[in-house]
Figure 1 (cartoon, rainbow, N blue to C red):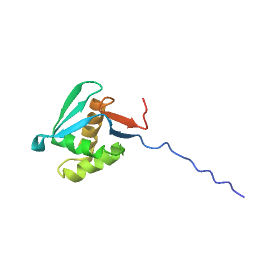
Figure 2: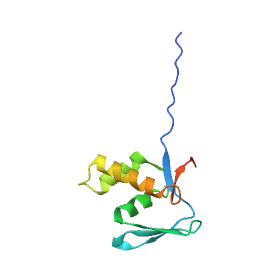
Figure 3: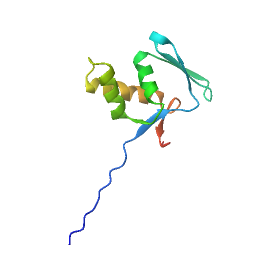
Length: 103
């Protein structure tokens, strides 16, 4: 009798919007984020606004990348991933937080 082993891979890291951050939609110009805990403001361009809207729920980098490719047909998957990574890195941890709350 053979014994089957299930190898579990760690779940992909997800990211979400920090719950204390407020977002003011600036229409075609993008959006403005405000973190009252840090008294800090960040301006987002329109594509940053698209990513921010996705982060209302935890999303993986791959999910964000796929959405950007779907919304912006002229963008390659590689460029979309680079843009998503840069967005996440620039806003972590004050505006975007890893889920679950990881360091």
